[in-house]
Image (cartoon, rainbow, N blue to C red; front, top):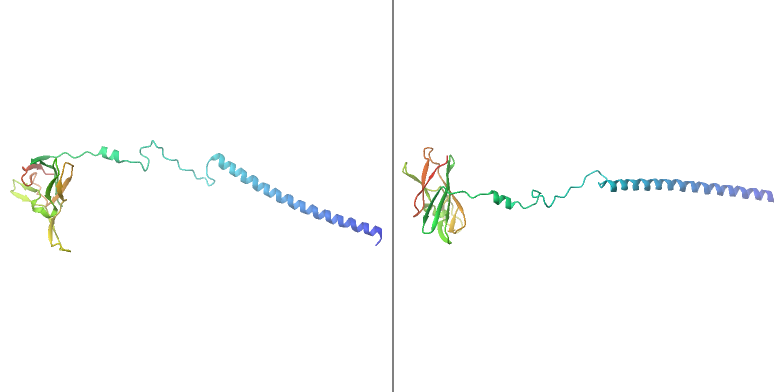
Length: 213
């Protein structure tokens, strides 16, 4: 190969090398543009989220309850509840040896008659007002009809070491004190014509109260 042919071959190799470098640089530039576009887009989106102060999904953050909001969920409402409650006033009272019998209500319906009462004492004392002593519990006396109503009872079958026994449909109280403790006893329904009864219990004087129908 003469000198002229060698020069021509060198020119061709240089041209091919230049073309290859140009292609590589072009591809690198395209990739750089795409990356810049993605970076720019992400940065813009993040800036919008940070500026708005809201999550990217559009959901708003809950507003915390103020400490001064008394009705906020989870706050203690017991004080308001107890302030709204007022103890019932007795409609009849009797005393005996320091103990006080207070009658609050005699309510008669087709299902039965309910007596609401309370027995209290300045000092702690014993009281035989257990459900098993139903025959010793207060009675409702219809003086006009000359009838006395005892508490309703149910029969409890024998179990374990306990024999069969009759129990009243009532709350039980084995001790009395100065604190309030309202009791309830269920009796059979009173006739509609009975408008008042005497509540009798032990040696207490009878307490005459109206019957609510």
